[in-house]
Image 1: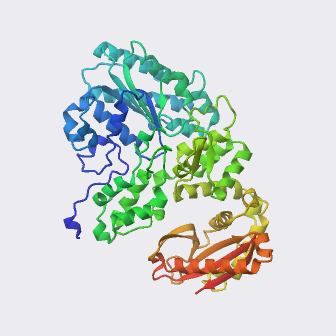
Image 2: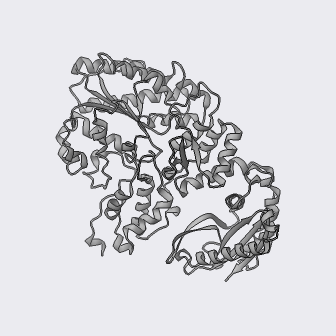
Image 3: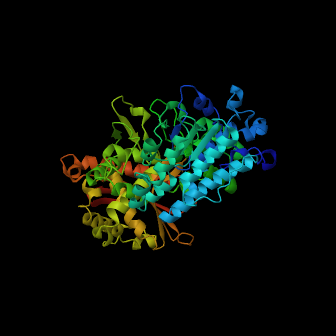
Length: 595
């Protein structure tokens, strides 16, 4: 089908302004039915919904604003006709005065900047409210520009004087964004703003004061990422309810597979690509999917920002791209955040978490921690740190391993698994002198030779030198792969690129994952790709009475796998050398070219 016969919608990547979606012909996933659940009489009027970064929370908040705010009444048909909530015909639409605050705008450079910036974010919300309601008069020019609590109190008082009704709906988006940024840089400042009489406690206490009794606030809706700052709400705003794990809200943010089935044909010309929507989804799934936020839910969700970024690239390149090569830079949660979390956690707990990751095991918590108060403890306990990893998206609920006695958590997808690996490298390897000193000999690779025995020997020497490291005390295949990848990464300036667990497409077999892919001399006449399948045996396994048969089987499996990977469409027309490398402990006992 030619491009001229397909009318595609605009990709909403990076856009949160719901009211502009139809004006600018943008595709969107219809999350409007969630309003029905928020309006239910049994639902708290002060819900808190937490989700990882870049999941579409801000778009959801802006949809609520368009739905509830009186000033959007004339646009109700334009914005909501055809949506699921429109079909419900609820009477609550366009029946509140809405003020919204976006705390992702708060600057965290230092305390003074934070105070000024917090005040300015409130001003932005108030000015927006005044533009939508020009008859509402409120002059804050004479107020102390550092006193956000007084500003908010004066605003609510002016609202009551003008409208004389309890009809104000407060929306707070990314309530903890700046607090989490501070926590990753300055613990003392974080404790200051979340402690007694701190900025956050005082502000939410002011919201509560305007909610109870004769106050003007009818509803408050709060989104954020983690529960580390929730203590600031529960003591200052203890009427709020964390509804994060309610099954009805599992899909309020992110994309379900059904939603992607609808969105993808609107965003890319699948026929022109020569693939089906199902094939695109199947390749996106292991990288972006896997998030579950309620043990009772039967669906998982994809990171929506990741999906939209990838589909933008597919449309731009007009090619069926590998999702792992096009990861949304805005979602790149740097390893320092995990390192910071682990720095506030007992070392034994951190080592147990790392060991669980390396062995591909499930994480267990008695329950998710809702209120994690660093003002009352110097470090996280095990349930708290696992809960934080869940809220940030590093872990998610394993609905296949449900239990009434606890909660099973797992790493949701390959993207988050690699971030875990990156953190382990930074924490446990790159700062170790035994890791830094040895050099892996890549000369044979750079010369595109078939005999890479010198490379194998130097891998043995390197691994032997770091066997006492915590990561390798219980070495397995993942730890082996991670250690070699980490070392090669530190040397990649030597004209080669290394990938670990690289996603490839094998004809007739679908997606496979190659352990190590080392590309040397990229773009040159002598460019060569070394495709390496790693297998690991313990020294006991390699030396027992059945070792000969065991080793032969492992070699056979590795050889078959790497040759299968070599046939992948990713390597079509390229000079690829496929190797099976077998390790017994740190020793490479087999390394041969497979043909």
